[in-house]
Image (cartoon, helix red, strand yellow):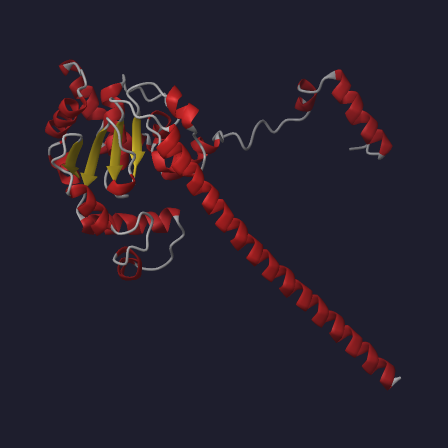
Length: 304
């Protein structure tokens, strides 16, 4: 009897050990496959970006690129140019609808060359690309530089609110920001590259602080550079709509998360629909209802 119990215990332990070993093997296999798939996905994304951004994209003379290092006034400038180039109504789903994020749209295959061609002129694109990677052509480029210390703090809060960073500011600043181990790399190199071209005729190099302290005069600089025809009577409305207070009121049309929702084609406030019974009959054709009922009868689910 003792021998039998001992044998049973050994078999039980062996089964547990085998199951754990198989579980570990499957886990390792999954990790390797995900890594491999991740590498292939990255290669495919880069391939799509190069193909669309440098081959399929045909620059137009009135194309405008808003370029910044992240957290340097990109969204603000999107709103300014939207107001200057259209009637500026806020019926848009998201600012990305009228001013797409060039790098992201191509990298994640959200837009292709045909989509870019269908955008009405003047096409306005947002980008965080360094100078050496920005598509070249007879376009205009508005670069906004912001005080790096302010960028570091703003980027830290963005990493916490949108990218699940759990460390403190000192850790983010020393281990990530200063080392350039953040999205779009080193702030120092990014700004320095673009600053070398601040005198180029196709580049308008602005400072974020000028937008804060002299919004009206800075907007007139932008109008002159972009060769927009904006009636003077529209300026009070444009200044009001480009204020922090106004944009905060419409934050869902500017937020990064709602941009992703718009890009994917998801509709907000549509997860919980009606909560009523019987609306299925409104959609089913007679043939579909017969097909469904036959399956219900077959599995004896009539009481559900």
